[in-house]
Length: 462
Ligand code: ARG
Figure (cartoon, helix red, strand yellow):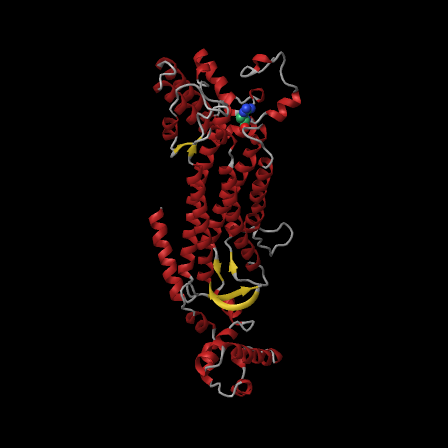
């Protein structure tokens, strides 16, 4: 049997494999709420514009709501021969309403319909991701405030560089998430034009009111070019790009958690709620959630790459290739949502191991820069020369396997005779961090002020 929706010119139905490769219902059924929202707006507009009689409009509206109820209740049967969500809903609507249902598709096409549905889905999802990212920022800012003065080693090249505070490290991720949220909002603002009414590609001869449908669906305005309306998937690409960057941020933090929870580092403790045991090694507490957050960034980046490749060779306007936008977009944005939730839980529960962090903060000659700065400040040495003198002192200390603070004054003066015992004050890590008062620096007072500012701002956002 040929297709009930478009089979007029076909004598027979599709081959089994054709049906399998063609059908999207397996994954686009999740667009049912958006599809029905779009159809309700479209049919109301058709009525207002005098294109459909009021009785048909009412019947179609009631029918669409009945279909929505069936889908929500789980009683709707999705059939592969109906290809996609658009035809599945229209087919069921026809069973409920009769021939009047056939008037719903006046002045539209599945091409503008699917573009509208996807935009609505992506828009809702971006809004949810923004709220989740704000939640993670809040959890991080709270940790930052609690640990504004907890010292830890700061790294470059994963080598001990200078002491920082745990709170400062947390706030670095708050800043990254702020940029992520900015990208989500930018993507949302740019996508918020309604393709509905572009029809197949050229617009329509019916006197439709695209401004009305755009407004009814919460869009800022209708899209201005009908070809672009149905050929555009920038909104999905842009959202996936923003999601990829966010996923990379989460992956970097996850990597740190994996390293930090190892016995060799022992910098933080994750809660039982976010770790797992081993079936053979009883001592294990594995950071699986962090590892999976790190791994899932791969899916998100993969979805972006996949869709870029799908789109790159497509002539205007719609091609069926574009049906491949869905699975990757759904999967990637859903994966990011799960990662944000898992990270928020992990951050809320985690406890830094302050004594271990303090010890590590002082090792690796992490206060060498403080010594060089002291030579500049107190003895007036040019920084380059101070760097050199400090390097010699690090060499002496390293040869004896001691810290800089354990060098005798004689050893110090062998490198620079004018050094006095006042130098020892800057060699402590507490001193080091509290001296970093430049704007954006790690001094506990700065960290406290920044964390407080963020918590206030996030309170206002909510
Ligand atoms: N299932 C299709 C998709 O997801 C809907 C649009 C189909 N349009 C068409 N002309 N065959 O892209």
